[in-house]
Length: 360
Image (cartoon, rainbow, N blue to C red; front, side):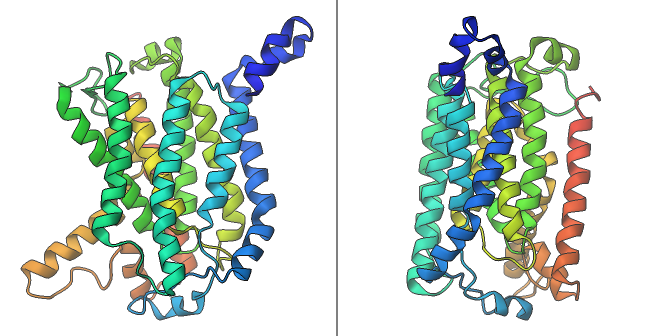
């Protein structure tokens, strides 16, 4: 919005020229989202307590988590509000990518909100049924995949593998189910990782920073040519949203860090994961996302391994509890230590993923 209204006035006031620069707008999108999320935190937490919108804790989980019962949930609404407002203020609203990502934020957020609302109303951990929740995610992902396919670029259906210069495959119409699977899969992966105070929030901040860089580089012809990655006109604008994503998450982390005053809920985790899936599709970094977001992949894999092993072994478990962070807790590690160590692993995956840009 600022760019549309203020940049044309540069002929009257030359400092408005700064609004054309993505780096400037991305930085202030982060600051705006951080302040919005941070400043509304106390009021929002207070309102949730008045409404008795508390988190229901699984009885079969670690015993140390029982004290968290009743902690205000649906804090993801803070994050989403901060992101949307910041994006509308600082991003180029004429860019189609802006609206695609806003659809993703609101769509996945709506599915998560419905799930959280039912949990709060029922006063237990049972929200939407697994089938209905999955249907909602698939519907949102299908809408986004359909839009991207209809308005596809020469790169849309191509599959790139990290450390390979050229695309290895043109998936054609099969790209649509691939795109749906990636969005739904990563949305659920972030949701599974959201089990400890600050864990998922800290990890999405790291991945968000990485994708801000990737979007900016992909949108610049000179940098894309130097790194030999696809140049995607308009993709640089996505760095603004990425930094709003990071800023909003940092502001939320102030209240979500141990001991948490508010929990993200599915409205936050499903939408934050879905956004990352859509970003990876837009800048052709689908498989790179699996490396940069490696901790989320490991968390999701631990759940799948647990389920499969339980069925084929006649009731035995591969882990004391899944996802993996709960297994570490069951083995005696304090919650804060588990969170910090997962953050360290997240940083290592981030470095590994970004290093592949030069190893090709």
